Length: 607
Ligand SMILES: Nc1ncnc2c1ncn2[C@@H]1O[C@H](COP(=O)(O)OP(=O)(O)OP(=O)(O)O)[C@@H](O)[C@H]1O
Image (tube, rainbow, N blue to C red):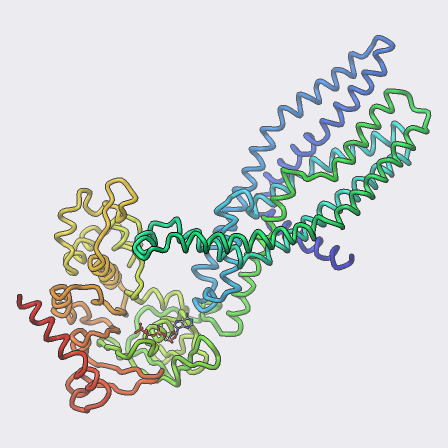
């Protein structure tokens, strides 16, 4: 019981912390309107009751006027309550969405975002905003709406006290409190159930999204996965439903019956007490109405209860996410938690010194890694699948914090620098770059979004990556949306998307990014496109510190230095000729894979 009370106080405190987002004036106005709206039914009840009494004497006019006025006030305030409540919800939710996106985009490290417990909470909070009725804002709105209910209750108890004395009023209070406790207790427990099944819901949601998204439709049809996906969804959904049903019985079963019985006994006792008083018909009529009002505290309040449970859950999930981000920041020394200085361009070098990093403690992916990237030069990184190349880029950019060793920018540990500023120094094309369903202009300008009006620069970079012809043929030019799902939109081929991703990085370099990272920049290009890329590679990377990851030796050999990564360590460094002459791993890989591949390409390009 003590624990439950503490939980309730904690939850109420959490909700109170959201009130400032709605603004003091709006909250005060909304509460005032709810107060009057809650008092109006009491006025109606008293007015009609006393009018009945006065009818016998032929003078019920005054009380009837009170009843009519109360009725009108109640009707007139209903839309105002709605409008104010929506405004409260929207203001609170806008602030929460801002906090959620700032957590996802800035507060959490990439490693943090990949944790299952973080993904569970993110999906619970995110799901709330998708459905809109179950948000933290809805919880605040619901809590404020309870003002009207409790005003009614207080009014009903006062009426009981005045009309039939203290004992029926006490019995009425007992009924209301016990019935309400039963309800809220069940709802709170239900909130825990919802929290506990969020992973099941996330899994079912993923399968449903697969079945309905156009992205997966092509593969699902050609692989004949429709039936399997159906069955999989039914099974995942059933798991959610089974858990819900079992929990529902537990939550709303025996304890709820207990509370309902206690409230019923209280009501009967109250009625008996009323019956034994020498009250007249009008007093009895008003008292019975007041007791019914008390009894209504045993039913769900649709304007508040469900919103409170789900909305509070979403808010709690968001607070927990921020808490995790704070703790992570503290333990890993995340530079974004308090960077000392901003760096936008390395002047001498970026150095990875004894870097240790693994996704699991027992499995290092980067193992005491030593690597120097001299400023203004190009480095190519090669290694077999899973050697740790992409991981190295993520550590280099501060997306992951090394578990040992350091990333030194001109000799200064990245942990002490402003990671956001450091990341803005990069122009990166990841292997799994994003295909934004946005106009061509924004797709390129994403590299340096503050310069999205630089049409000339966007056109120049499109030209540089060989997309000039495509631009010329697009009906709306740079304004053409790159998706067939929008009117006038157009999709691109895999190779065209890759060129576009390169243009995005080059646009970033044009506007000040000083470190260019290209992860498999030519994987989807045809032979001619690849040849064009080699021809412009030195031009693309001139003057910027660049790191190119590729399995294609024809790309790699153009770099100033080639670095071989094996089992999380740098095993060879040198120019193409030096490494071939050394006869080590690079030479063997080049021998086995590159010569044949290059020969085929040369033939293709010559054609
Ligand atoms: N987010 C992650 N969580 C857990 N393990 C991961 C994660 N990302 C990568 N790994 C594992 O870390 C290792 C290195 O992966 P990484 O992507 O860095 O390799 P890579 O050299 O870039 O490979 P490829 O040439 O195939 O792109 C692999 O064993 C991979 O399975």
